[in-house]
Length: 454
Image: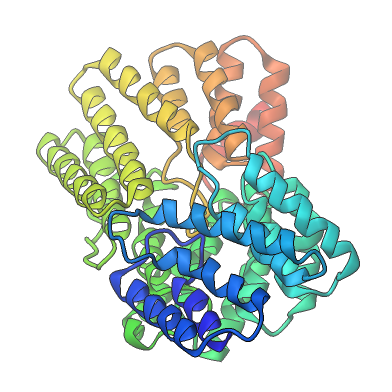
């Protein structure tokens, strides 16, 4: 069973996406040794056989299929051992992790959450239950169901950096920025004290996102600088903590990109430093930021370079069967291409391109490595429609954006502006007052117009 634990740990965070060849090799060797030693009971044998589904030797079996096979096997373990609480917990975790991001019924997540919540009533101080409930409901449509687990988790494991961070997944999905800020400040501090730089960077990515939604740009700028310093000391070969190296590289690329994009500082975005790492999804971020900046500045050559680079990263990810991130990079490519079309005066093509990107974005969900998208497609579409005197259509898009990403600064701002121009002053005032509450104390210039309207 010790080898079983090594095998399952080698797979790593089941929500972290693509597993490296090194992870697969380590886990496969642990399964081989577990089977060589031999299990003492039938129950132990089924645990080992279940984790073995993640490491089948047939390389044609893709990782999503391995997760689904593991989920089915753990379902059998749990059914055969109804008094084994941990079997049910691992089965529920597998259910949530194997869920199809495009399945908007959320059937697997809901089933997983129900199993875990029943056990949470019996074991209210079980850290795994609180953690996995948050993951199971880590979608905007479901996040409210994780409120109790989010509230309790930090108290259950108050010295664990990742336990302090996890509630912010729920807070972010429901747009509770102040709660997210508090959670990630605690997490980053604990991770720094524990010598876990990847966890510091992961918490900082969520933290900078929350600062930017509340208009606290100076604090976000400070995080950009401090996070760059932390990454310089990061050694992926000796990483400790819950966040994998991929999360550190992702945050390293995401934090400066968010700082420019969320402020609509297009000239700064056009010059975001490129990131070179083993992780294509991280490398794509800087190309997206530079492409967006270039398109907004009508630099057609630089925008084309970004579109081409994003297409190449997408293709590389697809060849390695990392279909989820290939799809996410394709959405980024389509957004930049749409803004490039706008810069060329091809308004109809730009609108069509953003609608296509929004449709793709609607069909999937965010990975847990990121607190939010780099400019939601429907928010961008709303801004483009507003720019071309279509306030009613724009308001529809801003509202749709707020369903998926509650309390986003630019979606609220756009909704207030669109409602006013569409002849709906009461609706405009409601959105304006909502944004002003969220950004109390901010000095962003856009807020002056809303204060005047109020």
